[in-house]
Image (cartoon, rainbow, N blue to C red):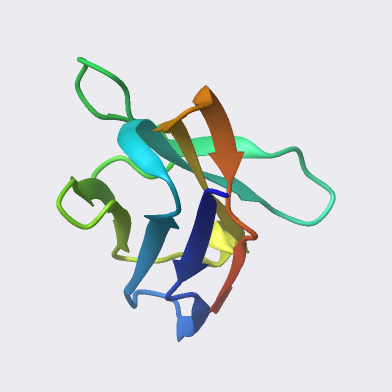
Amino acid sequence: QVQLVESGGGLVQAGGSLRLSCIASGNIFSVDAVAWYRQAPGKQRELVAAIPIGGSTNYADSVKGRFTITRDNTKNTVYLQMNSLKPEDTAVYYCNAHIFERLRGRYEFWGQGTQVTVSS
Protein backbone atom coordinates (compact mmCIF):
# COMPACT_ATOMS: atom_id res chain seq x y z
CA GLN A 1 0.00 0.00 0.00
CA VAL A 2 1.50 3.29 -1.11
CA GLN A 3 1.27 6.17 1.35
CA LEU A 4 2.23 9.82 1.25
CA VAL A 5 3.09 11.41 4.58
CA GLU A 6 3.59 15.14 4.92
CA SER A 7 5.43 16.96 7.68
CA GLY A 8 6.80 20.41 8.43
CA GLY A 9 3.65 22.45 8.86
CA GLY A 10 3.09 24.75 11.80
CA LEU A 11 2.54 28.29 12.99
CA VAL A 12 4.84 31.03 11.73
CA GLN A 13 4.80 34.81 11.68
CA ALA A 14 4.38 36.73 8.45
CA GLY A 15 7.70 36.97 6.65
CA GLY A 16 8.90 33.67 8.06
CA SER A 17 9.72 30.38 6.37
CA LEU A 18 8.66 26.77 6.54
CA ARG A 19 9.78 23.67 4.69
CA LEU A 20 7.25 20.96 3.99
CA SER A 21 8.29 17.40 3.26
CA CYS A 22 6.33 14.54 1.72
CA ILE A 23 7.67 11.00 1.81
CA ALA A 24 6.23 8.27 -0.37
CA SER A 25 6.46 4.73 0.94
CA GLY A 26 5.21 1.34 -0.10
CA ASN A 27 5.62 -0.94 -3.08
CA ILE A 28 6.87 1.80 -5.38
CA PHE A 29 8.37 1.27 -8.80
CA SER A 30 8.62 4.96 -9.66
CA VAL A 31 7.34 8.34 -8.51
CA ASP A 32 6.34 10.39 -11.53
CA ALA A 33 4.62 13.79 -11.39
CA VAL A 34 4.51 15.42 -7.97
CA ALA A 35 2.75 18.51 -6.70
CA TRP A 36 1.65 20.48 -3.67
CA TYR A 37 -1.91 21.75 -3.29
CA ARG A 38 -3.52 23.78 -0.56
CA GLN A 39 -7.01 24.41 0.72
CA ALA A 40 -7.96 27.37 2.86
CA PRO A 41 -11.20 27.40 4.91
CA GLY A 42 -14.20 27.99 2.67
CA LYS A 43 -12.13 27.78 -0.50
CA GLN A 44 -11.47 25.17 -3.14
CA ARG A 45 -8.27 23.20 -3.21
CA GLU A 46 -5.72 24.91 -5.46
CA LEU A 47 -2.46 23.93 -7.08
CA VAL A 48 0.54 25.57 -5.45
CA ALA A 49 3.50 24.02 -7.27
CA ALA A 50 4.19 21.02 -9.46
CA ILE A 51 6.93 19.03 -11.13
CA PRO A 52 5.28 17.29 -14.08
CA ILE A 53 6.73 14.37 -15.99
CA GLY A 54 9.27 15.66 -18.50
CA GLY A 55 8.35 19.27 -17.89
CA SER A 56 9.59 22.20 -15.92
CA THR A 57 8.30 23.19 -12.53
CA ASN A 58 5.30 25.48 -12.39
CA TYR A 59 3.84 27.63 -9.65
CA ALA A 60 0.67 29.46 -8.81
CA ASP A 61 1.09 33.17 -9.50
CA SER A 62 0.48 33.91 -5.82
CA VAL A 63 3.60 31.99 -4.70
CA LYS A 64 6.05 32.64 -7.54
CA GLY A 65 9.36 33.89 -6.25
CA ARG A 66 8.55 32.80 -2.69
CA PHE A 67 7.99 29.02 -2.86
CA THR A 68 10.25 26.36 -4.34
CA ILE A 69 9.31 22.76 -5.06
CA THR A 70 12.08 20.17 -5.25
CA ARG A 71 12.34 16.41 -5.16
CA ASP A 72 14.84 13.79 -4.10
CA ASN A 73 14.20 10.69 -6.17
CA THR A 74 16.63 8.61 -4.09
CA LYS A 75 14.40 9.19 -1.07
CA ASN A 76 11.00 9.30 -2.81
CA THR A 77 10.57 12.69 -1.19
CA VAL A 78 9.24 16.01 -2.40
CA TYR A 79 9.76 19.30 -0.61
CA LEU A 80 8.12 22.70 -0.59
CA GLN A 81 10.30 25.52 0.67
CA MET A 82 8.10 28.46 1.59
CA ASN A 83 9.69 31.85 2.21
CA SER A 84 8.26 35.31 2.86
CA LEU A 85 5.06 33.73 4.10
CA LYS A 86 1.89 35.80 4.17
CA PRO A 87 -1.31 35.35 6.19
CA GLU A 88 -3.08 34.45 2.94
CA ASP A 89 -0.83 31.39 2.67
CA THR A 90 -2.67 29.91 5.65
CA ALA A 91 -4.18 26.59 4.55
CA VAL A 92 -3.93 22.85 4.77
CA TYR A 93 -1.21 21.77 2.36
CA TYR A 94 -1.51 18.45 0.55
CA CYS A 95 1.10 16.42 -1.23
CA ASN A 96 0.03 14.81 -4.52
CA ALA A 97 1.92 12.24 -6.56
CA HIS A 98 1.40 9.97 -9.51
CA ILE A 99 3.12 6.75 -8.57
CA PHE A 100 3.73 3.55 -10.48
CA GLU A 101 2.99 0.89 -7.90
CA ARG A 102 4.58 -2.50 -8.47
CA LEU A 103 2.10 -5.14 -9.71
CA ARG A 104 -0.76 -2.59 -9.82
CA GLY A 105 0.16 0.21 -12.19
CA ARG A 106 0.10 3.99 -12.04
CA TYR A 107 -2.27 5.73 -9.63
CA GLU A 108 -2.71 9.16 -8.11
CA PHE A 109 -2.14 9.47 -4.37
CA TRP A 110 -2.77 12.20 -1.79
CA GLY A 111 -1.25 12.83 1.60
CA GLN A 112 -3.30 13.52 4.69
CA GLY A 113 -2.46 17.22 4.73
CA THR A 114 -0.42 19.44 7.02
CA GLN A 115 -1.66 22.72 8.49
CA VAL A 116 0.25 25.91 7.78
CA THR A 117 -0.82 28.98 9.73
CA VAL A 118 0.74 32.39 9.13
CA SER A 119 0.03 35.08 11.71
CA SER A 120 0.11 38.76 10.88
